[in-house]
Amino acid sequence: MKPVCHSPLACFLPIIALQFLLSGVATAQNGGVPAFHLEHLKRGINIGRFLNGELDNPAISTCTKNGDGSLNCTYNIDAAAALGLDHVRVLLKPGAMFKPGSQGVLDEQSAALSNLDRLVQQILNRRMGLVLTLSLEGDQFKNRLGSDSLFLEQLKTFWQQLAHHYSAPAYLDYVFFEILNEPGLDEPLTIEQWSGPKPPPEGGIQAALAHTIRAGAPQSTILATGGERSDLNGLLALQPFPDIDNIVYVIHYYEPFTFTHQGADWGDSDAITHLKAVPYPYSPEPAEKAAMNIQNLSDKMNAWHDMEMATKDRINTDFEITAEWARQNGNVPVICDEFGVYKKFSPPYDRAAWVTDVRNLLEKKGIGWTFWDYSSPSFGLLQTTGKPNQYATLDKDVVTALGLSVGSN
Image (cartoon, rainbow, N blue to C red; front, side):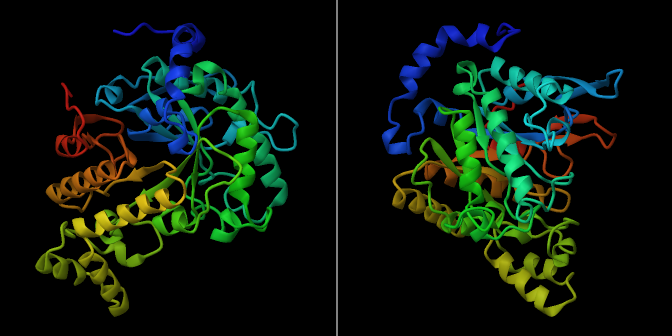
């Protein structure tokens, strides 16, 4: 059993010098990203959203209320770590840590930040990487980034202060900063606004945020993504930063959407909600049967054509294009830090087959990955018992598809 450290510095200072030497190897051909950092971005899993001190993952997080109503949370990631992963990813909502209008936009005294510190420490104790991803989803910051210049300035300050908070040597090789989760999902951002050449707020918002993160954490690895909700088209429209190195670039992959989101009752297409038993790989008869549930002919045609693209060859092409983009831009590293299948209506065998192909092809192209996700009822590796916050076993077929260790779970 690894010792539990009450201070990250106590555990990691003895090995920092060695890791610093190792991390300097092969950075030139990886966009300035230390090799040791990339070793912690090969195989990971998303473990939830963090808001106001609470990780929305009862399989990992346990919270009680303080006297002032704030939360005091503890975490246990042993079971997730036992899968053989090298990193986890957390969607961080600013929430109570964000104090607009104050010079110290990051509230260093908040119980929420103390809880986040404990979560970070749990992950560092296992010597796993942590991707902290800013998320503006569903709170008071939604729909402001592309239209509120004052909010952008406050957010830049928040990111700089948060990055500085986790910039000490003990964090350097383990904590990575992803600028924003899926730009355009929770704010009206165009590709030009997010990654265009004009200065903010008309464009270049990501570059502005990247510079402030770099100012707060000069040696930490940053993760940047294209617009269009981090899909492949968004990446292809993105130019790597010419004046910032130590950047890993991000895509999310849920193609074909008719397979990975069949039956989902959210998103942009009502047609998706009427689909179930969509096959992978494509098979004409079950695909036709699934399409018959869609009444609108245009929606039916588009969904049916999308189902026809459910093939390993299509996935291979998408990832080869991703790898070619990386090569054309100086061999910068790329990670796919979301991919998965909504499991309520997808055939279990087909879900495992899709995950197998995506994972194998990502690894073949030298692209790191982070599965979505660990324990949500919609996508999670953990199987629920049907009772709130109770889990029975791992989905061993998908665990195997990811090449992970089932262990004793």
